[in-house]
Length: 389
Image 1 (cartoon, rainbow, N blue to C red):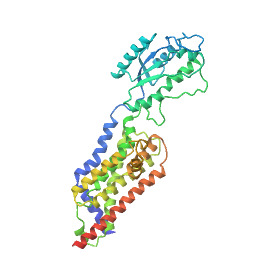
Image 2 (tube, rainbow, N blue to C red; image 1 turned 90 degrees about the vertical axis):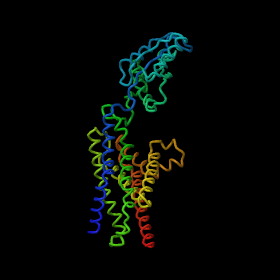
Image 3 (tube, helix red, strand yellow; image 1 turned 120 degrees about the vertical axis):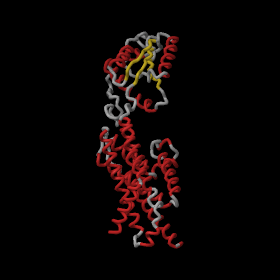
Image 4 (cartoon, helix red, strand yellow; image 1 turned 180 degrees about the horizontal axis):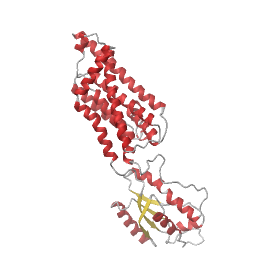
């Protein structure tokens, strides 16, 4: 045990001497969290809108009066005065097809110049369909398709004016009012950008930085001379590195948790489970770093392998949905750690769910596999070098 204590103290001495890596380890997470925490904004939850109504245009169909055009004004007034998700910038009353095409071009120009976020078109038979007591009405909207967040959010946001409109005109059959906040959305009074980034940002930072911290732990010191001169075993050497670097990782995660708490962490689930996932992610980073160091012949090779690992981990971290990837590439998300960490943190923080045992134990298994591989490869290398000596 005294040998192990001495090795652990030696590892702490080496870590303390590497000031550049320590600064990166503790400063980068704080810097990014502070920047994101002070950044205003978040998901698209409010839309500046324009409305084009064609309700004054005579329509065809079996209606009692095909010139009814009063209900479009009700809908426009609701969007203007009663919606939390919309602000009406302008509306156009198209009384014929020529005016409609002109109004549509003006609305398109407003959308392109970003003066509005969406424009909605009410059809010719809008009021007639309402008069007949039906809600089988097609509303057409145009939105900037390059903003995928807005494309998804508008589907929910439109339910608010539609719900208020149905209340106003008495179409309450099968009525369910929906507040325009998507399920699991971070409230607007929270630091939205930071809280949305946490499930992806924290695992990427913690795993990447801890992997970098340990990637030179074996290759940089040449442990063979010490093994030849002292009875220190390979297990003790690996154990001392694992304990020392895991302790530094623990301090890093405590620091990260304190800083994100200052910036109003939004977590629907258990904070204990949140910390547990961060710790397991950091432990995986430590074991992957030991593996990289064990297979590297020089520090330069270790740095190159680290960069390759980090790029691959980032690409298959889960920020690209698995359903959009080919089966062979989606499989990589399952066998690499970041996909599991991201999913676990997203479930805990945004969905309020408990730890998914499948993701948790797969992440633990990946960590143990890298640790075992690091020990086996390190043992093989030292045996070969002894034979050479």
